Image (cartoon, rainbow, N blue to C red):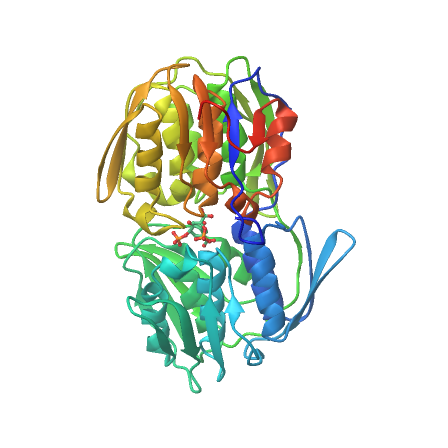
Length: 452
Ligand SMILES: O=C(O)C1=C[C@@H](OP(=O)(O)O)[C@@H](O)[C@H](O)C1
Ligand SMILES: C=C(OP(=O)(O)O)C(=O)O
């Protein structure tokens, strides 16, 4: 959808090779956290490289509503924070748009202050489960009143006298972990989160960077993360690294489009995020990490992806799922262009993203001529081999940016074009996607193609 609610049909078709450099935008997870932690600090945080996707802009707006000053001057975002416990009560409903990360982290950040806030989102976000955060927030003393099934719109009444919490996350979710840690900031004493499977650790790293005491211990129970409450967070100067989840699209497109050779510079390879790239290498992708280095304590590399005619289906290790959870849709596109079967187990969480991503991809891939099997927490793509996916269909994107971009990548390699009913959601995480991909040589057009 456009900002005015009108669908934006888009199509992609086979063209020549993709070549050149792809400078993808800043990391979405780190961008949300930069604004939220900046708002909870005392003084001015400066952020460059912030992702200016709608999800993050909505978080910026929300931080203003809670009393922080957030503005862009030149290329730098300035966040003048109000300190832990300093949020004021918003005088209107907080609209987090399409962003699960935005709404869940902000609910955590306000739940231990004596204020009330009502949250809503778009048609996709208002279908997503919120009890996964409101259950642990209730342990701090916060109350939540939402629609049935724990859906938005929802009002959170923050705890007036919060108590610290010890909470084992029932599902692998960095959003849940982060909501609990952010709530723990304004509770006296130690808040502990235990996660059985490691999920992205940006909150732990950034909270430490902002001056909170956060320790992580690997134990037989899982990762035990302990935060000491009521710190004074110190403002930071943040350079947001480029997003590996966005890098996935030019990388995967280069692997399946004949003759391609694409460099994607400066991609963070935090091990809790990089699972897709190792999976692609396991499939036989010509994908190399060049100029490996450390920046801001995180491993960074330039990714070089070249056309790979001999991709093979594999069994994707379920223990890798959390480190590539947002990349399964585009992985399934690469799997469709590979020889043999790719089995992806342990991915139940895909069913509660912006759409049911297993269902959305399976439906579109089948329509495009690819066999897909699925169960509640797994799916299997039967590869057609290089250049052999028929395509020639219109697919539904369900307000889901990753579904939209994945099918546009498929259309670059399939025999006949792929059309999206609506590519508007791409702007939530990767507003420059169309220009960046066409700059590499991809053929993307607005509107439907004749044979789709
Ligand atoms: O914490 C984060 O920044 C995110 C966590 C993941 O969600 P879950 O926590 O629901 O797995 C991921 O899908 C999302 O894009 C960003
Ligand atoms: C799942 C995603 O985001 P969110 O949960 O923030 O909506 C995503 O970006 O793929």
